[in-house]
Length: 434
Image 1 (spheres, rainbow, N blue to C red):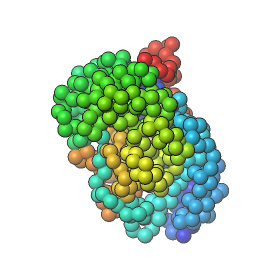
Image 2 (tube, one colour; image 1 turned 180 degrees about the horizontal axis):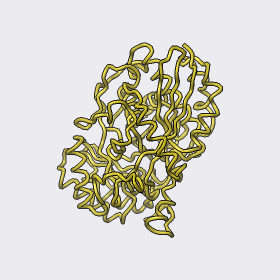
Image 3 (cartoon, one colour; image 1 turned 60 degrees about the horizontal axis):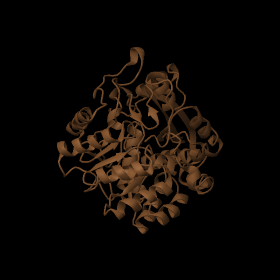
Image 4 (cartoon, helix red, strand yellow; image 1 turned 120 degrees about the horizontal axis):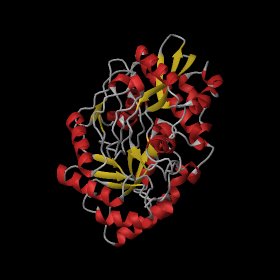
């Protein structure tokens, strides 16, 4: 079997005005969808970060992709993930996900690997999870991912989306948002995006969530490095009870040195809240320092920028060796990425926390997979016996996404510029902010 064609589709999807320490989401999130077609007409697909730079990186490997055997291609391209930048250089602390040039090769490789696995799976009639070692779970758990947000459902002009969740800039409105998500999707745990309002307000938000949901629902908070070490320790002390029972504190401050200091000071107070990270640990080169400092007890990986599904499985083995937990990070995405996440999670034994997903924030109008949105039932995505990723492209919807991309002005993600445009013309991302 040989790859006869390699197609890249740049699309845009509406995205609500969500807040984080990076700034404000733009009204459109960008994605690239790729297709690898074999000589006998079977098509493998993948979804990855959007915009012009990822397209250029994908085009750069076209000559190695077309004509290649999908069984061997990822081996031939393996230097893209085995070499290059490592360690703290790959940190996403100061870069929004998908915009760090030093993990561009890993992102490109991941998209090719996913499409190859989907192509192979569809050719032999087997699900991807069973090609990469075999599933260890048929249902993959995901967490609700609430954000502080401004009014609006995303999109612009005649392409505005319904604002399903409404404005949420207070503890009370955030609790309502979470309850809506749980009612619709059945999520059993909550991963709350902080680093937006004063820490005291965010502490109160977690307390109100705990009061509303009871002790059985794990709570987690991610301020994306917005706090100083002292503020991180203060919040860790104040939320020791709320973050117990399966919770964690994610990237409260900058760097492994800061995280290690927070961990040491909390433990000195008898507080064992684990610290998680998806920005301080983004490559295998970060792990020795993270272990030495006991700075990270849970790694939040992402097959998109870790270099693919099998890299995630290797990471899981390393984390298990060092007694580190593992979960999965998320970015704004559609159903192809959700199914790719679910397949690698299904085949990864050492997955100790429910995965993140932005999927509830995306609109059914923008979905590009045949049959519409992937179901999330009881907080889980079920892996069926469909071949490959279990989804195929709806080409009418894909064309709408491409037209949306052509008509919008965005070609990269820039949350800081969006904050300056709509909220505060003088706003810049500052770490720490508190």
